[in-house]
Length: 189
Ligand SMILES: [Zn+2]
Image 1 (tube, rainbow, N blue to C red):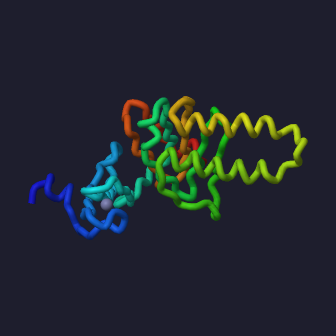
Image 2 (cartoon, helix red, strand yellow):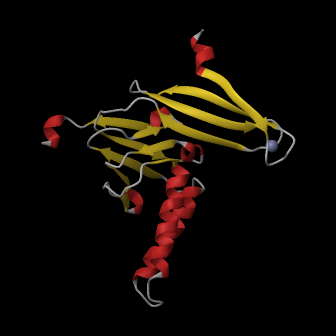
Image 3 (tube, rainbow, N blue to C red):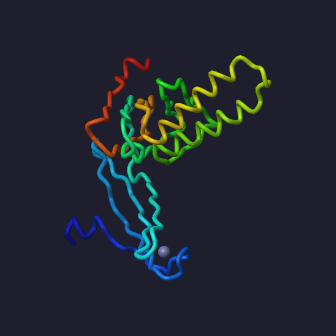
């Protein structure tokens, strides 16, 4: 079997539950992450309506601790995939938003847009608990405004994951906007 065939297989097909007419093919695709690890990408795509979905599963565990950064400057960049392990710290410095690592932190796969939505709903909950004349409210509204702009690709920002044990990933849409800086063991001790 050639690499090509192994790499892009239709593994299952079924009738689309959405349009009831098209056929959805599940396509299996192995993606080689720049650092040599492999991700399994499952694509669900209807041939009639525009239903589609991607799932990303890591096949190998990246044990390299490091700092991953991605510059997001347009809408296309928002589709970059993220996998944050429980030890990964996720930050958007321009918006002062952080997901701290910890035993209760979720593993999650999403794209940049998904991260922005999670932040937005967390910020909205926080805002709703403030007093009507709390001075923080205008600051929060500005943050929400910037989050909206970011979701439309109109706010440039950096997504940074600091992973001291390894396991987190960024799969960039545009590789030139991605950097990985290895954390040397000595810096961890
Ligand atoms: Zn369909």
